[in-house]
Image (cartoon, rainbow, N blue to C red; front, side, top):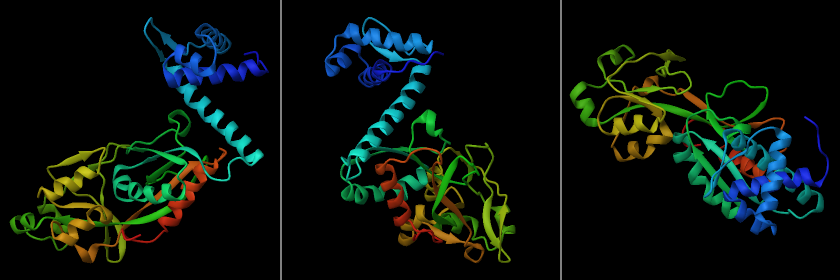
Length: 309
């Protein structure tokens, strides 16, 4: 591909992003003080240079193609970094400002991340936080995220991981279930119980329970008549309904334990935990707004064992 240097290349990219955001050449033209024909020609030249169709055009509207959607996410990120570099160079951004996109698992998101965000925005009111609660692994470039919170983080030399907390695991059930089925005292007793299963989205396999046996943490396979995939919050909901025993993060059920809605069992085997980490690309410039949120979360959730972190 022949590179074109000059204002027209960057200007075409900016017009493309504007049209994609507004889903209209006409609206983009009005905002850019151009004619719709000029916007259409600029995007046409961009498509010709890239040899890729960016928009599907109809008489009523435009929409991004799959290639256009991926290109739009990367262009928005690149333009944002250019704007940030100019603000920092000229001293125009003394305070963090702009949008930060962060992905987090549903469990951590509901019980740890979301409750912290009002305090963060009170400190940095010019920063907008766009949160995706999902248990799937994201692609930072293709999906357009700045930060992600993940448990069971895989080693990746292209990512930086900062530990947020060690989340303690507990085994719980309702009093009604325990009256009917008995209270387990040992690992062997679990075979006689309905142990609610969680299916790990990445592997499709049931997650073994993590218990401390003879002072050593080990994975213990369990079985039961209920399986939940994608969202571990469903495991807690089933446990509250009396469906069986569940192993879950303490921070998800601490209010249930305090009220007596759920009871902790197998306490002598407890104390196992799993870490949650904040991850982001190692080779990407980190804007001030992203760094502010990352540092705030790390400071607010200093690594420690248990849900009281």
